[in-house]
Length: 134
Image 1 (cartoon, rainbow, N blue to C red):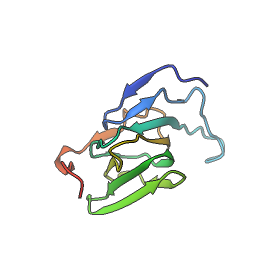
Image 2: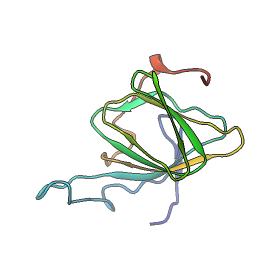
Image 3: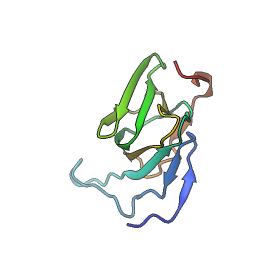
């Protein structure tokens, strides 16, 4: 698969063209049932914050390729930090706010989501957005 298209997602992160249902149809999860995933590269620019959001009925697994990211989770009371080489799991329906810990380098991650339409199920939660780092 080659990447030919970049776009800004609803959560204010940069994305490369995702691999969608046409190319990613795992069948090992449930026999005789097709489940689909979205697979993409997401990048958070230096010093940038995403927007608080959730994916109502879809899980996300994130592998940090480079850089350092912070993420507020749940009611934005719990913070985690992920570095290159770390995996992060975000359960369905959990509000989260990702941001880049570096003011100099991009944070780049591989994101797999159990949703073939990576942006359509995203729900923005502007009432939970934080304007500055803790």
